[in-house]
Structure formats: C-alpha cells, structure tokens
Image (cartoon, rainbow, N blue to C red; front, side):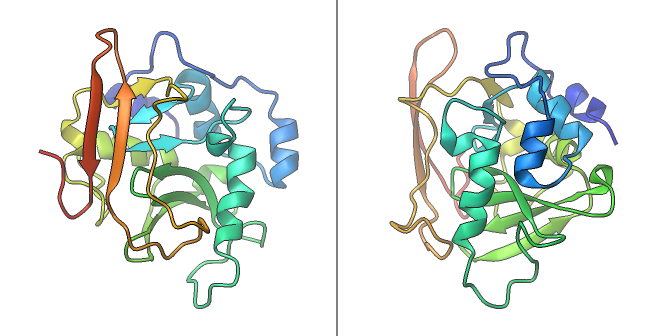
Length: 218
C-alpha cells in the first residue's frame, strides 16, 4: 500500500510545516519497532498540520512535544496502564497498539501492528465511550477514506468529507486545536465537546467552534 490514494484525495501542501525527512533509525530505535512506509511519506510530504478541522497526525522531532511521535507514543500508552479488559495490548508489548494521532474530542488514532509494517491496520479509540474500532486499512488509506466518506468511524463527526480545506499545514502554538481532558490525562474522561481557536489561511480570520460526535458541526 502507498500514499498515492491520499495524495489524490488530499493534495499535499507546497510548503509543509515541520516535514520530517529522516533519519529514521533513531526514531525507530527509540520506539523499538520499524514504522510503515506510507507514514514516512506522509510526514515528509505533508508535515505537521490539521486534518479535516478535527484531527492531527504526530510527527517525529516536532517542536511541540504534544504532537511529537516519539514523545506521544509512551505518554498515550502510559495513560492506559492499569486498565482491565482491554481488547488489545499496548506498546511496548509485542503486537501492542501504537498511537500516531488524536482528535479534537480526545480520541486516539492507533496502529495495529502486524507481521509487516506495510500490513498494519488502524484502530480508533473513542474517549467518550472508551471503545475501540478497527479498520482494515493502512493509515494513509484511512485518511483518504475520511476525505471521500468511504471511512466513517462511528463516533466521528459526519461532515468530515465536506470540509472546505481537508489539510491545513502549521498549527500556531498559541492557537492550536485542543481537547478537554481529564486532569490526569487518562482515558475515561466523559467530556465529548472540544473548543478550538485558530488563525488559519491568509485572511487572519479567527475561527471558534464546537465539535462533538453526537452533534456534528453544520
């Protein structure tokens, strides 16, 4: 599987912000696992940014540690520590879920490792219902499916495919999307609403909205 499907659905920016070109050996050594080729292509071509006005993909060596892959993986997986009856193991256990992004609602996007990195699937963890939903596709096909409407996680807003700008490079640090989180940052926070304030595009117009899976933004 390659990134070509995503490029057709959502063309990459001319000037990506904080694009990562490698080297990959230190990143994979820190995580203890080889990463999929389509993810490497994505962070090189798209860099860091905001997808569908709803979610972000973590990027290695990002200036913001909250969206830096090598920092985010242990932080997210630690938040699941001690929880019982999880349907999947978590990194760094063998075959454990490996987070690669999150949504405005505090949901996590995770890889489901398989024998080959090119065969990894995607799992969405919904914060509101503390439920996992698996998708038999790679990460870039998952994003392309969100853009076309062919992929529709149960608790995601229903209007993602109609987003005017499916990808916006560069999250200003003072106006980046953020989610209401429990003080501990652990799974279990029942809050579903998230507020975002952003200064996007050349117009400098401020945007403020409310997103929830139960009440999609018109």
